[in-house]
Length: 361
Length: 207
Image (cartoon, rainbow over all chains, first blue to last red; front, side, top):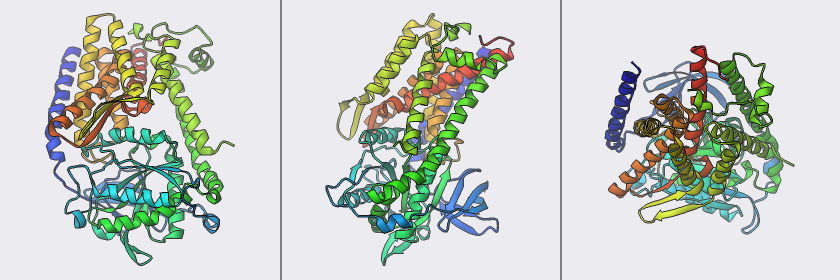
């Protein structure tokens, strides 16, 4: 019976393998579908190129927090939770100083998981096969503009093609390389896939795209990164009201387990013009240093505000480890009475342990 | 003074490396051997050897690629029977097949409707289940995790070279935080839980 089960499992696995290879070609067909987020009255809240999952959260441009309660076809149904209060950043902005080139204003890393992403009205395609997508230009402009204000920026144009489910595993390697420069924040620059009106805007008379912030909720840094996202929005709202489309706090990791202040930004959609996204990047170069606390005037308040999220992350991490240990003891011994013994054994303070855990199988 | 985010980084690192060492220790490695491997993975993370430059550039990281592969080879050599070795290798191929297939199903990103969890964690869970089913041991789970994810990269490498795709493939390039190592460690943990649960259900004792 067991042999038969194994045989079935192996056959199924190889079917998936072969099916997967066939889908390589399906993956190259561009079908940029989008989803509409609707509230309890079926009024559209926004649109997104990503599908959301029940339990995901969205903070709108006017700071309304919604939770996804149901997904039906292309509609994502939301429930209004509350209006969130963003961090108070007014004092920061009054005292924020734009640095001079050569002065120390912190370190920022920028990379692109989906480096082929492009803007159709400008380039005639939403994705460039050579991997040299328009989104690289957006990231470079963000990098150059921040460098002008004294920030040390490490920008990577590494290619992570193809654009599949393993792209983030490949870009993880770029992210870790950038982390060796000890950046204060790491930004993964993307573009979304929605109709143009979602991101169309004008900032100080210049046509630009809005920017959406994405926080992955399937990692231990979720709360710290969410607090950072709120701070980015708070600063952006002060400098350039209306530039932030919203914040996703959604399923996924997006390599944000690698540290706090790891963020994903969507500069417009494939239906917007590259020039609009570039303008948004130029504006955003003023937002990031203040939000990440890179300028001397903003450092303390950034640390204090993000400390709240960090403490929540630490609490959850420790809670999960303790819960796992308790669950393990309950499963293996039927009681947690030997917790002290377990910890002593694991710390190497006691010889009382399995000499070979695998040998008992 | 340490900031909240710095403390978060320190706590996360302590848990990751601490739990990692304890998991490696469950594969017939001594405490010292497990510690040495963790230290080698951390130290080797800073060294990437370029293998090929050009449109498709290829490299391998010492800590995230060579060290875990060396550990896999060591475990295979030390396996008691040929059957155990074959089972671990089959688990690796099966893991690679499923991971590759799932990676292609989730065409765009972790928000794909085909996935319930981020691919990074999903692939580790697949490796743990495949490895445990094939060998019912923590060692085969670890081998399936590391070797399975390595094989996925190798498939991608061949596809990229054959199609002259402009991409960069650094095997184990995220060092000690690479998906290969994460998959291996999570697979051991999963096998540990599954094994203990099975023994409990069957009336055995964990000790």
